[in-house]
Image (cartoon, rainbow over all chains, first blue to last red; front, side):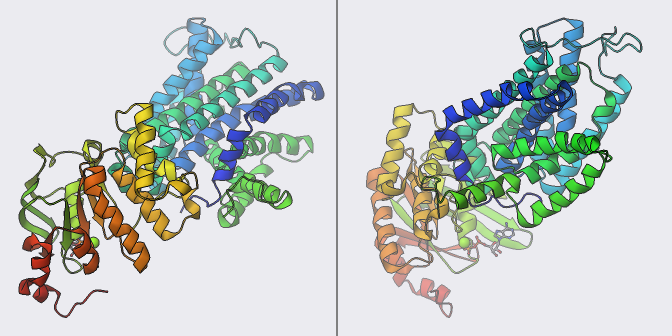
Length: 341
Length: 237
Ligand SMILES: Nc1ncnc2c1ncn2[C@@H]1O[C@H](COP(=O)(O)OP(=O)(O)O)[C@@H](O)[C@H]1O
Ligand SMILES: [Mg+2]
């Protein structure tokens, strides 16, 4: 059910991505440098959140698209990455980039642990297991709390709340926003680089049938674990970026329900297109903020998202990004280079 | 030489293979028998998807019995499935490349092997097309290209000809006939098309209810009254 069939028109997005790398660079640059000129600082923080959650959504989409796996634990993975990043920042005072990599690697390790149940189950059962892991994380972090500069193993002190330092080259809100856009773009490039290579081919066969993959020499467990590690790595990086954005993390910001929400929005946005991750993150961060701005309770967003998910599952399996793609090819003719069927 | 030594497979109450012992030594060996005879199960045991309850398998002096399916593939075993398994979202070329990915080959060797396999199966012209747009025969040939790429030792084909036209089967036939010489691999071929078996297989094995009915030269096997009795009243199309 949830692991829907791969849609037929999946290649155009890849082809577009490949042939227009310069355009993409320009797009990333525009995204990184234009909004700060136009927006007040409050909105810039929201947009930084959008950039960060784009990476999380891309990591979720990777697992869903390539292996048909539903992970409801990615916000927990972000939290785990953020925890490690904060701990290092306060404990050792290491540079932001080191903390970010360490957070990514820690979350990758955790992702590999999640992969273990995924080797045996799929679909709803796996989704439930990942949700339980997310729930367990929420409880653990409630007990431990996020490090805030205190002593001891957990680095938490009730009073002395310090701020996590940002990267030396991007301490201002404007600079940090651009930094997050660039890191997210690099993370998505890393996904893309995997997908067009050996790992992507192995994943495609696994998704088609594990028997076909094995009989083609693909080490199925290895590539499944690899997908989880990569996905966890990127979620962990996003977690450290989030810690840098807020300059602290709060145990209440990672409830298990948020993992469900961001997964649902990833499907709504479109898991088969990189733009889908951006749409998912924009819905996740912008819609509640906009509603608040209009004086409507931000929780109303949940109703809208629920309806959108039902719509996506029922009529638009490739999400909003897929619909936009269809619209574009209708408007501009069949311009996707021989991929018409 | 592929040696099958007392291989037994049972699924619950069904004995799909019953102490099968045979030594297969022809370039192309046909495997025939009525539906449910255990033909696919035999290929599954060879490729490692089904663990036999007892018995051993040796191929060219190497014991395969304990190896994982992907290890057998890397060793040189390839197979196609009764239901074709080409991947829609990849190009024809990438469908084949995946089998070379797991082999310790240099980039140049991979490209040569890829080109060789695509030419051998006659699909070079469509190598960059997405499999999603191909017809059933092109998809089958893509799968076959995956089987012949990377110097395999043994290729297992499960009803590759089912559902194709006369001329398509003729193409398939000439490809299978070229495997021994051009690719240098042995082939085991399951098919219900007796003409195809006759035109490609030097030797043929007949299974019925998981047991070996006979093994020998294809012409004499097909003329054997025992074999006719097995098929009596259940003429396949
Ligand atoms: N995975 C399985 N589980 C249970 N029974 C099976 C399985 N695979 C095959 N069988 C049974 O084993 C017998 C042989 O099947 P199979 O090898 O597919 O025959 P064939 O390919 O000759 O038509 C059949 O009775 C089939 O129902
Ligand atoms: Mg069969």
